[in-house]
Image (cartoon, rainbow, N blue to C red; front, side, top):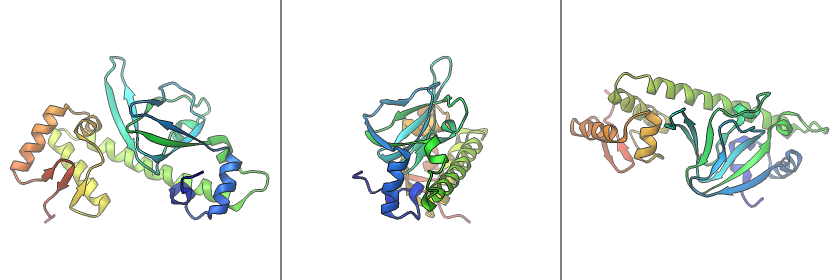
Length: 219
């Protein structure tokens, strides 16, 4: 594969030669998607782990009335679909859509989980890496639950921005989401969110220009 897979967290601490053997062992394949193209639809059987090689992918939940909620944006080098691929029925409860032109590598879950007949050491490392990544993603989902559970829109915005600041280790940072995606993530109306951001800027609680945000230093 042309992509340097040694940069992917799922292949951390695995040498390049072993990665090539591992990709062959698991039957990995790649596919490209245009912005807005569906990768997996809700109720689809997901039997492979998706790894974003370039671009980004959205995890979306749609209710019976057709209202869409952006659950999370999966960025370059991150995984998606693993929570459904490991289930017995493999049925997805969400949809995965290309948020931008993207390339995805698919690793068949069954062949990742079960080591080959040679019981390669790097295959065990792959499983360990995957478990660590899943644990990290579960933490992010718990953070989202905490954010959307805030009683006010301002509370959601403040907690979201504080968590982003802590994650990046800086009071100034750039968001990867545009305004529409942020509103979907917060389960908020975009216009109301824009007004609240403006009010928070006027009160000196935040400063921003497009997707670049700055928070005042913590006391």
